[in-house]
Length: 192
Image (cartoon, rainbow, N blue to C red; front, side, top):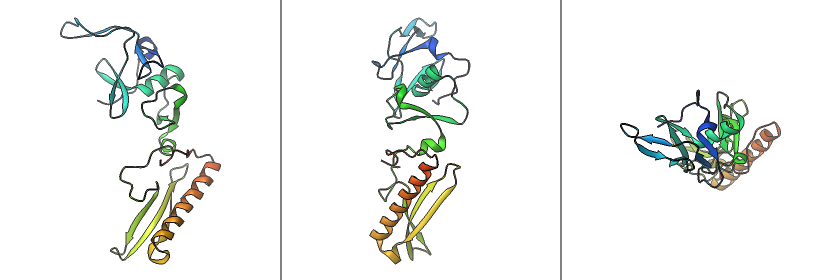
């Protein structure tokens, strides 16, 4: 199931925001299922939603919606095109309004956790082999506000593994500080 854009749905008619609910939503309506809609599915006041792939979702008329997007829309209105809702504290199950922030996809990446396939232990720093493995580099990489990739490589052959790694990490940290001063939104949680 995928989340769909909430076209012609007023979520305020379906749900109530409630911090005591694990999803932060409760049903405002009764719903029924079965061939003749005779089986009670949900009742007013029931917790709305189910966990799927780390996120709370709700289903209505055979469509699945991400709860954090529903809550954001209930409070702030429609989500503009090409915008996403970021969980500021990186807890995908914390749907408190103060934890939900409207961002571009690019800005959302600036608050993302370290990828599970990261081998260096530092986001945006990786080893690159060149000339059929003859040379190894630690590469530092970031993206600008416009999405342009900035990279700089530090030779393991020249500086040694430890020094090249430290240089790549320091370079990336410096770039992030500069980008944040220019309006980027890399948070302290980025890459953690």
